[in-house]
Length: 153
Image (cartoon, rainbow, N blue to C red; front, top):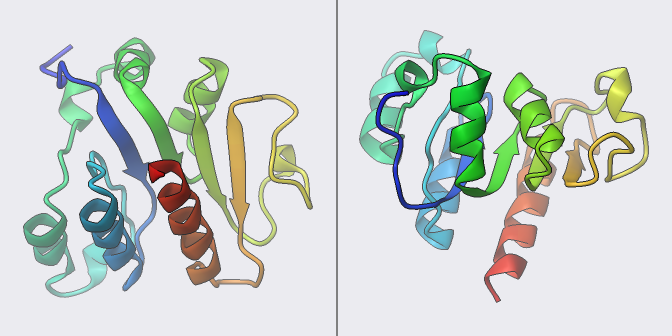
């Protein structure tokens, strides 16, 4: 595995950032002093200047080349206090390892997350944050920010 930070990383924020959603990550980083380690975005790549903004403003630490397989990913996850992610293989791996994970879900998520609950019967360390309305991520990010601020006290 390539060089992964030796000191524990407070959190990884891994999510699809669409438009102003990326600004939420800057707020998380600046307000809570949380390292934004990895961002996965699909739609920002098509927006003129968006990638430049992400790299210059958020300054994410991109660890993709350092992670050759799930063993490398598990080693990185072991150094985290918390993973914040959408429904990804990384989130499932962290849950299987018993690491705290907050998963950001769409209004009607994949079947395994069930409905109307904030926990997972498969992964006790996972907390689910759900869209209350279709395509509205703001409520999800507001809930995450509220929870993060609560963890600071």
